[in-house]
Length: 560
Image 1 (cartoon, helix red, strand yellow):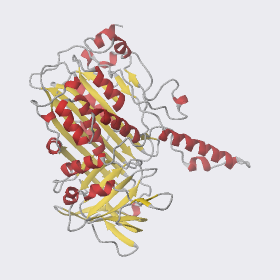
Image 2 (cartoon, one colour; image 1 turned 135 degrees about the vertical axis):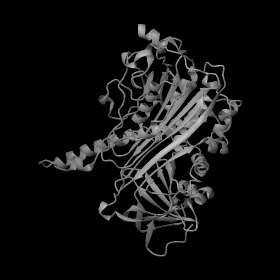
Image 3 (cartoon, one colour; image 1 turned 30 degrees about the horizontal axis):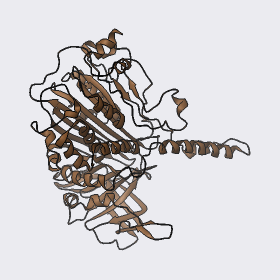
Image 4 (cartoon, helix red, strand yellow; image 1 turned 60 degrees about the horizontal axis):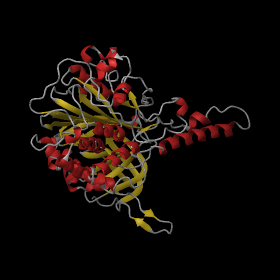
């Protein structure tokens, strides 16, 4: 137990929890990244909280790990998967391995896993069954087809049950809570780009700010709650847990993975209650190390790359936690899916895109589909569906309008959140009207393959949205964090970077946000319409069940 005593010296946590931190536990679930590359959307959100102005990292000493002692929300393991990991509840936090040699000299981590206090293990899901795997090459026998269909139906039931096990209860979300946040944040973070492309994830920023609210107090917390549309931190906590479950999917057909983590400064103590809440309701893994050390910074980058399948490796190279950092909050989202109807590469041709800086050549993908065409006062739109759930919305401002005008007016966000079809009760009465401007017809879609990226400073936008105190060392309150420092704690940096690529097979994207602190158009005339994205346009990737936008972006230049 010598390592146990060294590794937990000075940590404010119950003795039984400290001891558990150095004992091995269940295996960690490894996300399934296999399958044809189709759509990948990712965002990593990192929050750092540090001291001002005289804080400094402790010199030397072992790697000190703060035990969270919590578990994730009470979700049962997916049906039919218990045998895959006997005795392991996939919703429990895993303790660090017992072998401490890999942590390196002076507690510097060789990898983020070897010195992790606890790793959140994501629930495993039954794989989505493909009919062709069961109904092709059926053997002889009069009951061969019956057996094949029975096997397929059983696999499909197991898949469906595992999906339903993760759904939140109806009524968890108040009406319009995400619409208000998206409308304000999109206008702040996507407009004013000129000829630059901009992209961000409303859902990921929402989750990261929710974690930040847990560590903040008094007016600092109240401002964040107001922006997030929550009447209390308890209500926000329940909402965050539901958002996690509703947007988690890893079944081989669609990948939508969320992950959170805490990066603690060693030699300090923190509020056990706050760390427990972040573990239980946010599925947050916990780590601790010497702030300012390159090895600890690399451990953070490795965690981000692991959660986002390496899509953010180039962007993550510059991430650093300063010696004064007290805590960093990290949140990621990774999304992957194929188009329901892939574009034919044979129809891709070079054509002209009318960018703000002048005409440029771009490779345009073309497709004719029978689908719904939408229009509003100053835009037209179509939906591109992903296989087995979710979609990308393509929104084209009218020629006399612009992306910025559409975002500032709120019409684009109104459209994204509006019900698209009438809801009719059992008597045939319309109880909810859908979007008025729509028609089902042949859409001749022409859109450019694009590879766009952006780097955004969020501080000014968050201040405009009403979150100001956390950035002011004299006004910021982080009492709930319980950090053992007498110096003021405030947020000093908030950066968001993203990249999105679209081709014939699908979409691939990644993004991260770093928060560091020292601590309508007219109705189409016929049954056929040309929808040509040859000038700046908006896109949004929406989740299947909630319809919430995972990513929203403005394409001003398809070639980056």
